Image (cartoon, rainbow, N blue to C red; front, side):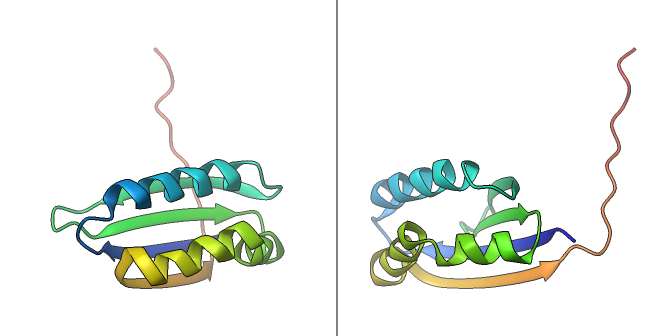
Amino acid sequence: MTIVTVFRSRLRPGVENAYGEVAEEMSRLVHTMDGFVDEKFYTSPDDERVTIVRFRDRETQRVWAELPDHVAAQRRGRDEFYSWYDISVAEETYQRTFVVPDS
C-alpha cells in the first residue's frame, strides 16, 4: 500500500533563499531513493507551503524519514526555517488515475 506524507509549513521571514537550497537538495535526494513514487509542492495564497510525497510502502517512507541527510535537514528546518509545521503520514487506501487519450 502506498504511503502518503503531507508536510504543511510556514517559513520564518528572510529564510527563503537558504530554505530553497536545502529543499532543492532534499528533493534531488528523495528522487534517487528506491521506493520513491512522486512529490508535489504547493504554496497557498497565504504562504502556507504544502509538500506531498508518496512512497511505495511504509518501509521506504521510514528509510527516507531516518536518512541522515534528511534528519539533518529536518533539524535545520526546526532551528532556522520553520515558524510552524504539521506532518501527516497515512496509507493510501484508494488511488485512481484518469488521463484523456490523445486524439
